[in-house]
Length: 113
Length: 115
Image (tube, rainbow over all chains, first blue to last red; front, side, top):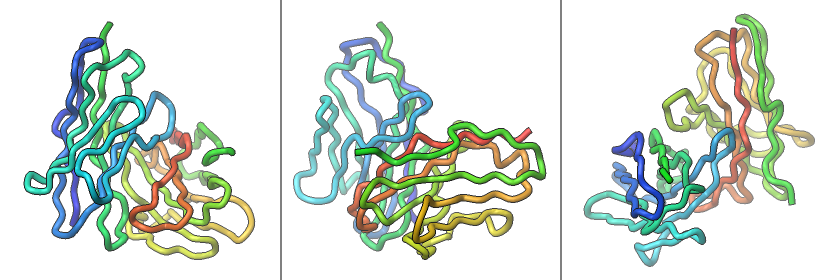
């Protein structure tokens, strides 16, 4: 069975500082990986995804994540955060066999002015 | 181009009552997924439906919960005889093709409170 571990439940960071949100997964087959963001009282929005090809994927708002197969990780990074990045971030995995999307417990990013 | 719609946004029920949650997928999407989010937890898959068919209900509790996605109208998640432990946020997502690589688009959720 697949599982996703987000190692940090909360990450406080000062504005304009860099941030890394960690995500590790376990699966015995090929996987596709996703990061979703949830703003307060809203649904989840897709931030970026890895399906195949280049292991480094980027979002339009400056986030990037790198798929590392040997370490089974898909950490999310941003070199300089803004107040508006304050939200909960969820890592998710699905395998090529079409089993359900499995989410981590989430990391709450708080950007401090 | 409207996104995934869910209603009601907030629902309060007393123990033993029924809760009906509705989800209208994005235009052109025929695949619907329901997830439950408990406090301090990630989303847990409940059920995956196509029009008039349940494809995967491996995450649905065996009793009191049911889901449908009729030919016409929204998908409905129904919880009978609610208990306090059913209090959670319920999210619906839709996708156009239903494959593993298909992005799922989420609605704003229905927050169910059971008194």
